[in-house]
Length: 119
Image (cartoon, rainbow, N blue to C red; front, side):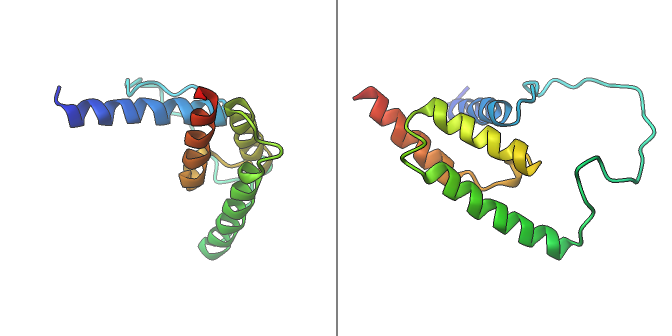
């Protein structure tokens, strides 16, 4: 495997780990499992509401702003563990998963806290 392939694989595994940490779900490394078909209901899941696409975009923008504010608080987020706990708690409270969020600021804080731990 070439350098770019190794970097891509490592990045994918890191993002999978982060997603699993934040959401509490355990996703596989891409293994396919075939499960029997299930009947699907058109009713919303408990705690979730049906909104138009426009409302969902507004909610996502609001949630993104609140997520960024939550993880940016340097008084409450002092370690990598704090950062992961805040992110996971936020996602659970808002009933969203990390895939719905832009994790750019999260990655910046993670790098900042990692560098601080090395010092």
